[in-house]
Image (tube, rainbow, N blue to C red):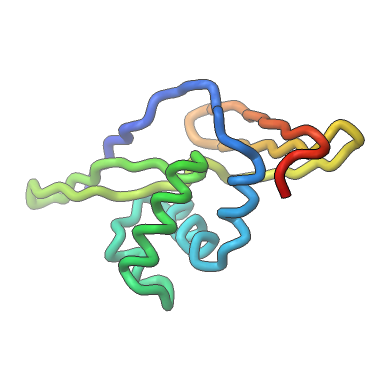
Length: 125
């Protein structure tokens, strides 16, 4: 089995509040944990949770939009391929200070570096 990731390195435009909202959902956290072990298909992710497949797809979309998950193609030994999802982070850090909230994510994958997004005080709640 081999995997081809379809993501490109770009500056993050993700709202840190959106990342925190996504992480507040138990189903999304379960997906992220399972996808951190390696690429997982939506069917495999559904089997790991108590959520319906429709809920899994909604949470996958939320995680993709929040850049916490990436989509890839998984090639099977028999020549078939399927869409799979893999975690893009292995650490999320939240810092609260007088200038606002900073959400930093880091990945140990292939030497990728830490990225940081900040929201200012008085933002949306």
